[in-house]
Length: 88
Image 1 (cartoon, rainbow, N blue to C red):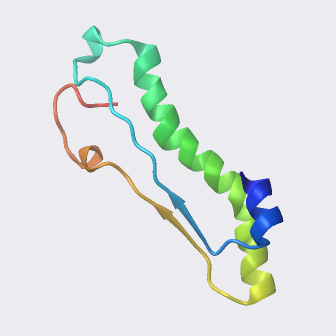
Image 2: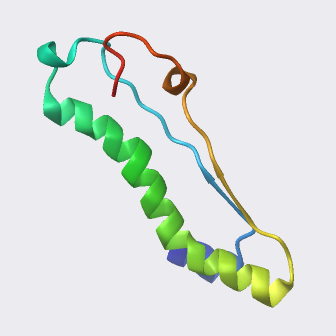
Image 3: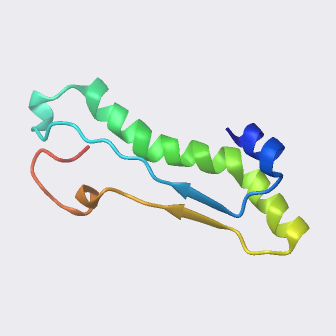
């Protein structure tokens, strides 16, 4: 995707990391590690990878165009609650 943006647009001013998924809310002892960590992969690893892949283009845009660039990370509302069974 980063290569396509570079080829088609030649610049990137804003990267918005916005993805979300949730599992059934259940105690860790009743859940499955694979399902739990798929949630973490999407939210944490996915955000990291998108930033890693697009950061070079953002920096180039800022330097070459003399503009401010931004990365905006969003999260699910549920990420702000402390609810039994919702740790993932």
